[in-house]
Image 1 (cartoon, rainbow, N blue to C red):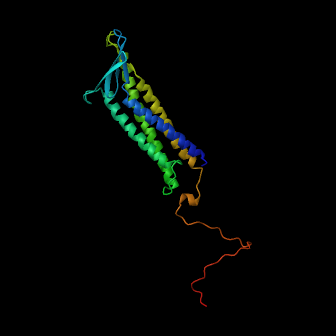
Image 2 (tube, rainbow, N blue to C red):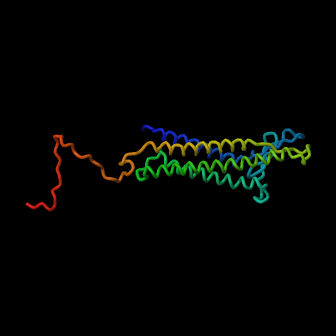
Image 3 (cartoon, rainbow, N blue to C red):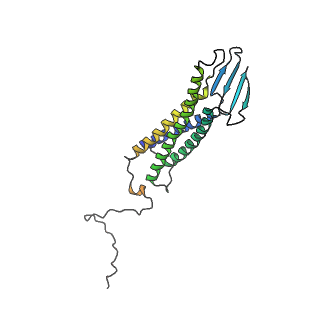
Length: 228
C-alpha cells in the first residue's frame, strides 16, 4: 500500500505519542523523583517518588509506601492527579488518532470524520504533554527552592533531581511532538481531496454521458406515457 505524505506524518505522530505515553507511565511508577545522599554514609541513598520512599544500602533497597495521600506535600498530591490524567488523555488520544489515521481502514468511517478524529487525538496528546510537564517541572522547582534555602542548615542533606524527572521531561516532549505532528497531518490532508466514491462509499456510481461520435449504442428506458 502506497503511503501519502499525511499518512506518513500520522504514523510518525502515533509513534512519538506512543513513546511519550510509555515513558510517562514508567516515570509515574519509578520512585526516583528525588534523591538524597548522606555524607556520613556514602553507601546509603534515599529516593522519593509519588507512591513510596526507598532506602538503598549496598544494592539492597527497602521501600515503604506513603500511608496517606493527605500527608504528602502539595506538589506530590497534584503530581499524582495530573500524571493519572495524562495517562488517560494520552491513551484516549492514541485510540482516536489510530482510528482516524490511514493505518486503520474502516469503510463505515467517512473521510471527513477520520480527519476530525485525528485532529481530536492530536489535541488530546498535546493536553497530555501539558499535564506531564507541569507536575514534573513543579517538583523540580520545589527541589531547587529547598536546595538553595538559606534557612536550612548546611549540615542537613538536600534533595536533588532524580532520574524520573528527566524521563518525565522526555515523555512530555515526545507527547507534544506527537500531538503537533498529528495536527499538522490533518492540515496536509486538506490538499488530498478524495473522490466522490471515497467520500461516500454508499453513493451510487456515476457514469459520464456517452459520446455521440461513439459507435457503441446504449439502451434507453421507455417513457411510461408512450402507448403503442
